[in-house]
Structure formats: structure tokens, C-alpha cells
Image (cartoon, rainbow, N blue to C red; front, side, top):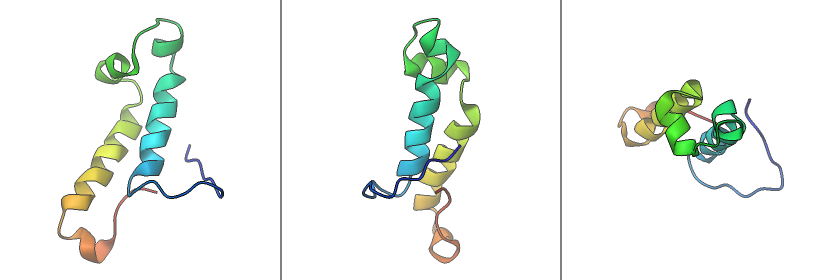
Length: 74
């Protein structure tokens, strides 16, 4: 779920997706119960939808068509 903060300054183009991905990984059963690092859990396939959204947001920053369509993400 996206999080919106009124009192927080903008962190960049994909800051919202990045923050949600980090929160998803830290709250996953892989980190909490198995004690693995968030990087290991990401490689195992946890929070795959947010990882893909973050990838698409970063890719849209390099895409020349995004000048007209706008960046993806929130």
C-alpha cells in the first residue's frame, strides 16, 4: 500500500516506491521469522510486485518517451 506523508520532503523520483519496498521487506516473514537480510529475501522473491514497480520507475527515468507521458510511480 502506498504511503503518503504531508510533512516529509520529496526524496526523488522513485522515493515512495523505494520506501514501500523497504518497508515490505522489513515486515516480511523472511526477515522477521527466519532472520535473513532484506537483500537475501529480495533475491528469494519476496515483495516482487513492489520490486517490479521500483524497476519500472527507475527505467522510466531513462526512457525518452517519459518526457511526454510522465514518470511512472508515485
